[in-house]
Every structure is written in structure tokens, then in C-alpha cells.
Image (cartoon, rainbow, N blue to C red):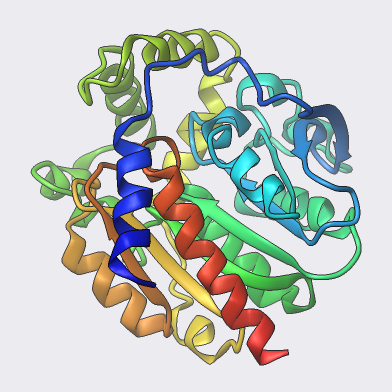
Length: 300
């Protein structure tokens, strides 16, 4: 891509104003999806016959994290959708008690079976993005059901297996002596107190979202991230085109993300932002994802 296109995308991202994150793009469809763990809140935009893109939010996140990306993909002819993970925001009533037989925790299998059900609720292969914790879910889904994937994008996903927090900046060494609940509490405290200094409209929505999100779902997700599976060799062996996309001020140092991309045979993109390029660099992220889509089409 030429320098002018790179500069245009960056300029558009730098011009994003503060906004109301509850307001969805015109034409966005709201629906409920009956997943194994319960009803999941879902949104979609774009032509119903367009190739499908599925964007999966991470811990404490929601489908609204992608509202700036939806119209960019839809205008290019894609059918783009997202959903709230079980226990998160408007999917708060989905959880392990709804499973057959019921379980007591939001475990890896719960989230993975929900994701696979979402992917099966459509024809053909989908372009899939997993954000943060959901990056690990998307990796596992690709390995279990490669027939459902056209591409895989890992956005700010844990770059190391095992105790994923050991490599994060400044407080990584403390993660080995922290329980999932304490770790979740520290994360929630930092978000609520806006340590990342996000704009007023964004922090207002985030705090409102916390009123619905189940705390136990966050605790369990942090526990899962402390036991991130090592699937790097299997990902590298997969022929599905992959992209690792991160902000240079992410939780984890850029060199860990870059090494991870090399280990799994993925493209690597870094932006002048933090942990949430979907919010702060959507034009650049969509640009790089569409380049990945072109690579996938060239392999077909």
C-alpha cells in the first residue's frame, strides 16, 4: 500500500471525535442468538449476501467496541457482525447454569462452544477477529473448525502462553502471586478510574456497561488468561492467512507481539495507540484486515 493511503487512514483515525458509543451506525441490526450458554446480544451491518466478518470482543468489552469499524466493512460489501460474550454487558444472562448439564464456571469450553455456534450460524468461511482474550478463543476455534475461517486477525491478543500476564509492562512480575479475582479487581479498578485517559463519552459508556457485566465472568476470564494454551506450532501450520495487530502502547511490549507473529506465520501491524486499536485506529485496522482478505482470496 502506498504512503498516501497509509497517511489517509492515520489522519482519519486521528480526527475521530469523542462520541456516544451506545449509538450504533445507521442500518445496524440488533438480534439475539441462542448459544449453548444462553442468549447472546448480537449486531450486524451490511448486505446479507456479503462475505461474513465476525468481530469478538474481549473481557469487560462488548460488540460496541467495533462500531467505528462496522460501516467501513459494510460499505465495502461485507456482512459484519459482533456479539457480547456470555456474562458480558447485554449477554449477562448467558452463563454456565444454562448448559446441559449445568456447570459452575465460565470455562474455556463455554466460550469456545458459543463462538463455534455463532460461526455455524452462517454459510461459508468467515473473516474472524478476536480481541484480547477473544484472540485465544479465535485461535482455538480455528484449530478445531478450520472450515469456518477465511482469515484470522488477533487484536491485542496475549502473545505468550501460560501465565499471559507475566510479560505485561511494569506489573508483570506480580502476576505470578495474584489470584484471578484479585487480578480482575485490579483491572476493573483501573478501567473505572480511567487510568488510560479515554475520552468522556467512552468512559461513560464503559462505566455504564459494568452495571450489567457479571463480575464472576470477568474473574473466570482472567483465570483462563493465566492458563493460556500454547498453540503456536499448530497456528503456524495452518494455511489460513493471519494478522497480529497491536498498538505500540499495548499492555504487552511490542517485541513480544512481533515475535508471536513470526512464530505463527502472521502478518504484523502496529499502530500509534494503546490496547484498543478497534476504537482508536479503526481505519488503519480495517485497511490492514482488508489486505489480509485480499491475500486469502488470492490463495483460493
